[in-house]
Length: 171
Length: 299
Figure 1 (cartoon, each protein chain N blue to C red):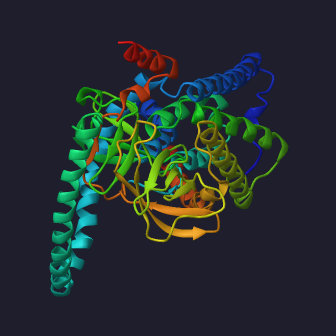
Figure 2 (cartoon, chains in turn yellow, brown; figure 1 turned 180 degrees about the horizontal axis):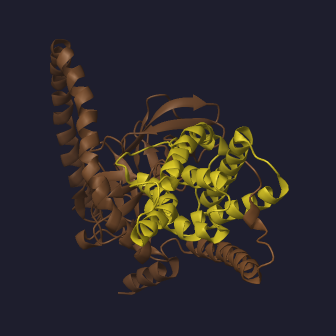
C-alpha cells in the first residue's frame, strides 16, 4: 500500500486497523489462559492485564475508561475468574490512571514502569482479596513470585505493544 | 510522554458531555461489576450457565493443545528411561517381587474387610465412576487453583462430585458446562478434605495452601502426630469424598505447621475419574438433609 491512501476503502481499512489492533491484542492475551498448561502454583503473569496496561500507558487518549468493562468481562469468562473481578479491577485501574495523568505532567519510561508496577500490585491484591472472600484465604507471600515476574514482564510486553502500535499507525 | 490533551476536550459541549458520559459509564460499570462479584461470593454457582457456556466454547482449544504438551513432557521421560534402562530394570524387578507379596496380603485383608462389613451391614454409595475424562488446562494466572476437565453435564458430571486419578485425589467439581467442567484442586485455599493418617488413623483436615502444597491441621492440640513421608488418605467424614483415596504425603514439618504434597500432580495426570458424592445426603442443604433423615427414621 502506498503512503497515501488510494481510495476511501483503504481509508476505512486503515481506520479499522487503528481501532481494533489494541482491542484484539488484549483479547488475544486473555486467550493465553487457554494454553494447555496445568499449574499447581500461581507463577505465570496475567498477560492480558499487562497488555492492557501497556496500551493504556502508551496511548492514554486512545481508550476511555469504560472500554475496560467488556474487555474485563471477556477475561473473566475465559480465565474462569468470578464474573466481575477483572471488570471491576481493570476499569478501576483506568480511572486511577486518568487521575494520575491529570496530576503528572510528563511520564518517561521509568515512570511508566513504576505506574505499571503499582497497578500490578493493586491488581494482585484485588484478586487476592476476592479469592479470600470466596473462601480461599492464602498468605499474600504466595503471590509474590507472580507479582515480581509480572513486573519484570512489563518491559517485554511494552516493547511488543510498541511494535504493534507502530504497525497499527503505519501506512 | 506529554500529558494527553484530550482529557480536557476544549470548548465543544458535545465533547465535554461525551467525556462525562464515559466516566459515568465507567463508574457505573465498576459498581455493577462489584455487585456481580458480591453475587458470585454469596452464591458461587449463580453464574454456572454463563460460565459453563464459556467453558464449553474454550475447552476444545485447550484440549487440542494438551496432547502436544503431553508429548513433549513424555519425551523427556522416555529419553531418561532409555539411558537408565539397565539399572532401572533390576530395580523394578526387585520392587515387583516385594509388591507382589504385599498384594497377596492386601487381597486377604480386603476379603476379610468385606466379610466384616457384611457382618456390620455397613453400606456406602456405589463406587461406579460417573465419567472417566482428561484434565486439559488450568487457571494458571489467577490466585485460585482450578483445572478444566473435558467432560461436563452431558456425561453426568455435577458440581460437588469428587475427582480422582490413579495416583490420588485431584479435587472437587465446582462448575459444569455441557462438555467441560471446572475442578477445585486440593491445593486451592478453599479446599478442605477430611483425611486420616494411614499409619495410625489420626484424623486431620487437609487444606490447600495455594502454592501447590497442602497444610495438615490435626484435631489434637500440643503434639504433632505427623512424620516426614507419612501418607494421608480420605477418611470419608463429611460424606463428600469416598474413604481411602490417597491424598497427600508429608514433606516437611515446621513446628506446628505440617506441609504435605498432593499425590496426584494435576500437571502430569493422564486421566481423571469423576466419582459420585459418597453420601448424597451430605451434599444437600442441612434442613433438607435432616428432613430426609427423619423421614428415613420414621419408616
